[in-house]
Image (cartoon, rainbow, N blue to C red; front, side, top):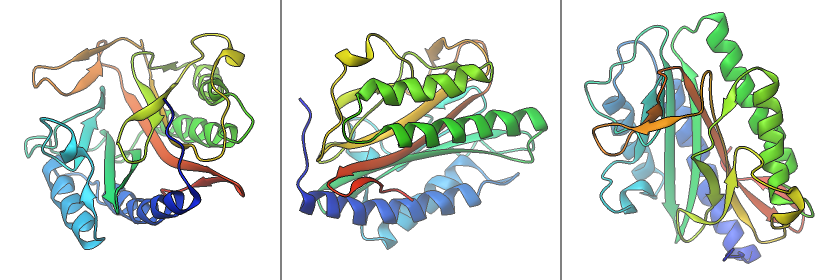
Length: 249
């Protein structure tokens, strides 16, 4: 069931989203050669506290970190440990959530350490796919029009969307209905219509090679089975009477 939000609830999410947007930017700007995933996690915990919020992800059963950090072929749910030290050429994906005044917002970004031209092209493709997805996330559209926008950009550049993972609704719970695939799984008109009060975590997940994933030995990290690089871009949006608002920028 899709949980619709009132204007007041969406305003609270906008306040939290603005805080998360600042945090996301600071974390991305801190990715450099020699920095560890744990360094980014420690900074995230500090910034979340400074902003008056709580980490969303620690509210998930069994997960004890504010961030999920992945490198290269890792796509989601990577545990931010000290032994993951970034080096030149690495693609780093940061996923972070903020719980503020009873509501979650969720955002992700992929960046690279001194990237080569192919990695730059790969990242630019993900950014463009997210922008097109955000344009499609408007009142009156079908939900799968978001999926279609993502799939069109990613596949036009010769990459693949991840089929096993989805974007999602977000609000009082970190993961709410509806699910938002990165590809079109059926007839677009069979998907829900986007309407006022929806709050969505629009998420682009894609890979340079096959879309097949595997869970690593830590029980959390999901990575590309073929070892090729993957990317992750996500923003939380609210569908308001005045249009779609991106909350996490």
